[in-house]
Length: 442
Ligand code: S3P
Image 1 (cartoon, rainbow, N blue to C red):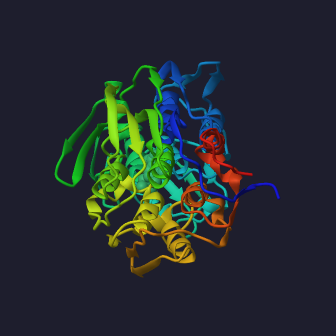
Image 2: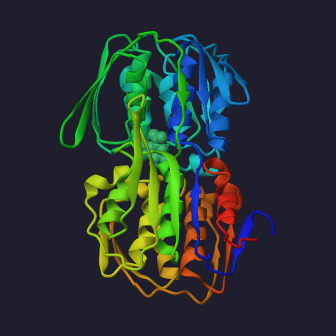
């Protein structure tokens, strides 16, 4: 059957240096910000994936031209308030929550109606989280039960807002920042810390945005309507994609990997902090700064023993896309690991927390759940003997890739994992790189 993979044996020891897919968050942000810059921007090393393709399609529909060249993509930015939005424009965000939430902020000044749609997974996700602040700006936004389709048309009465973002969501924060850019005056956001790529990118463009850090929150002031010039941006590798290889290496026998040129923004490397506390000894070398972002190479060696963790909730946001992988290491650890307040994990491309529990039970690990807190009873001797079939409800790319890593490290007589196409949203080369490392995947 097409669109599934079969894995019969664990991966042989490997020693290798790899690069992984470019950062998805930065790819989408660079497209959106270049669309409102003035003039021609050049984005190098843009992620080639479905979410990014959809981002380009979306800016094209609102009147922004781009040209794909061999080494970079040129985006012809139209400036703030420069979009040409036709009547009844339909924008399709596909599978991408980031694109969907952010485009609503970017288009908050639209004077024609926009209808935002997405695929089955995205249509199940919550949009009330961005509808609420957008309405405070004075934007007209409608949806049934906070789900897609969302209809938006701007207003002449748009005004700056003060908003407390308490979910630790960078998508909500970015939606508000982009809407603030369309709005006269200063918008003030108190945001529970989350990835800060939008703020850093705007700062590197000398946009008037100020950020003051407190222990848990970032206090952000955005001055609206400040035109900014087009820019060049070179996208580094994605820590979320690198993480599959970090955990593959840790859980394999006698293996080593160096993953080159990865974005190691502190708001993204919760997985490294957490796994190192579990005895992983992951190292970051060749650190450098690029336009406010930190970049480095990640070095990992296999480990035999892992220690359980009582994971602080303050790390949740910086590891939010990596918990499936962290759970795999917890399965192999000595002792009981606890993770708390993981409500947001059930609001991703699929209900990932619930599916992760189902998965761990399936491979014989004891797990308990109390509201959004879980306990994983590790088994350092875990070796699997059965056949496993992963259905991958909602075609979640991260569920697919995590299952492949589990099959290649914990074993099992045979694994069939459905929806291999799902990797196209974030990491189309995932299987190719694994095969290069020696994985036998049919
Ligand atoms: C993202 C933010 C996170 C993350 C997603 C990408 C972004 O979502 O899970 O994969 O690029 O802003 P939330 O903002 O909903 O936490």
